[in-house]
Structures are given as structure tokens and as C-alpha cells.
Length: 395
Image (cartoon, rainbow, N blue to C red; front, side):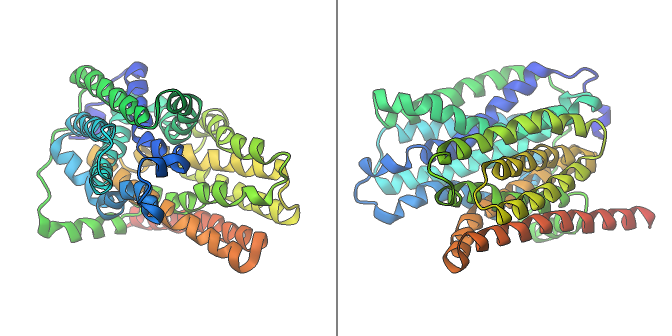
């Protein structure tokens, strides 16, 4: 069944926002550890350097299973996948609030990765189903802000909670948040028409499924650009601060994610109503490349850093909006969202080590040259895949 046959005639903004809130919970599965990472040793004083695993364990399943997750979500059902992913996330956070032994804590983080994957594949696949065509770009731009908004909320409200009630209180609060969303979405999604469930992929079919997605210029395009974006975004925010003037360091680094969110929701939405999402992504990468050159020529200039944040905002929202534009069927969108999840986890995993290595070998200039190459790579990969789509359509 085509998505056009099931799509609601009116955009259900209230449901979109509840699904977006589920994205906040998914992002908090990373953020709840990141914002207290410097204090986590108080809970596990014997963990030492292995504390970094508390962050990376969530992404392991995303890297391994991201591409095929779309097939499993389509088989299990989009509504069911989202609701059960929220319940699993709530259960893992509730267990973490009990101050588990470190090895068991890491096991819950691994299972939490399954919850995270279910949310980030099912949620952005459901959103286009409840939006009119003219609102899809806006809705997907809203969805794209979930990571930045979640981290900001954790800093504004999570850290004061920790200061008042201890580290474990943050895990308990996250468990309650996820459980409330599971109940809410279990109720509101009953009235949402979704595509029929598909057969469960067989183990022997998984390699072919991977190749089918990688070979499709429609399905892989959002993920291909997303890999270049995620390799840079967190890495630059992590490695850049020592190269900024201490007087403006905190304000610039704090402003960059917020600027990217504002741009995604304003200029990005305006552009998406007037041109294809892929073109907006390419414009974002070119602007990012120009900002990188500016930052090379004028080291640490705050205005140049904010220009880079503007570019990030364009790439961010338009990348998610490109999924339903390039893939008409919900099952195809789920596969494309799964590939984006895999690309995002890979980018986050390799980005910071890559930038640290560049700084070690060639200092600030090396870091910005690597960023420039990645931005141009993001533009080029979209150009190559756009040509492949034209060639495929011509056959």
C-alpha cells in the first residue's frame, strides 16, 4: 500500500509534537550520561578509563543493525515499535536508578541502544504519515532538533536535579519521562493510519537487504550526507573550545547548537518550501565549507563559528526532510531512516578521534582542513547520488 493512500488529509501537529518528545527521550539516552560524565566516577570509582563505554555502548547496535532496523520495524509495526522502544528505554533507566554493578549497568546501556534504534527509525517514519505534503518539511525540521533541544533541557533542568537529589535521580526522571510518553503514544497512535506490517526479514536475506539499501541512490542519500555531518558536528563542538578566546569560549560553544536549531526551524523551513531538501543540504555543506575557510583565515573568530552553526542548521533539518521526499513508501522511509541511524552512530564514533588526531598532527589548521574536506565530501556525495537518480529514472 502506498503512503499516499493512508496519509491523513490534515496535519496532526499535537501527535507530531508527542512523537518529537519521544525523540527528546531518545537523545537523552546519550545526553543523560554526557551531562554528568565528569561526575560518573562517583558512582563507579573503579571503572577508570572504561567509563567512556557508558556513552558508546548505546551506539553499538545502531552501527551494527541500523540499516536492517527499518525492515524489522516495518515487520513489527511502526506504532508498536515506537511504543515498545519507549517502554524498554523506561525499564533500562529505572534499573539504572538502582545503582547497578558496573558490568550490569553497561549491559543496560547496550539494551538501551535497542530502544534508541527503535525510536529513531519508527518516529521519523510515522511523522510523514500524519502530515499533509506541504507540512512534511516543517515537521521533519522539528524532528531534526530533538538532539540539540534534549541536550539543552538536560543542562537547564537535569543538572539542577542532580545537584539537588543526586546522580541517580536523573535516571529515575528519564524513566518516568519515557513511561509517560509510552502511555501517551500508545493511546494517540491508535487513531493513526499506518502502512500494513511486512514479512519479517530472514537472516539469510540480511546481506542482500544491506546491499539493496546501499545501492539505492534514493534510500542511501540522506545517510550518506548525514555521515559527513555527524562526523563534524559533535567533534568540532568538542575539540574547538581550546582554540577560542577564553573570554568568549563558553558563550560561543553554547550558542552554536542553539543557532543551528533556530536556523533549521526558520530559514531551513522557508527554503524547504521552495526547493528540494537535497538542494538545501548541499547549500548547507557549501556554506559550512565557506565558514571553515573563514575560520582558517581568522582563527577562532566568533562570527565565523556562528556562520558554521548556521550551515549546520540547514544540513540538519533538510537531511531528515529528504527521506520522505526521496522515498515514497513507508517501508522505504524506514530503511532510509535506519541507514541514517547507522551513519549517525558511525559519524559520532569516528568524528572526535579523527579531529583529535588532526589537532595532534597539525594543530588548529589541521582540524579545520579535515572539516573542510568533510564538508566538501558531503556536498560531493549528494551531487553523485543525484546524478545516479537521474540516470536511474532515465532507464
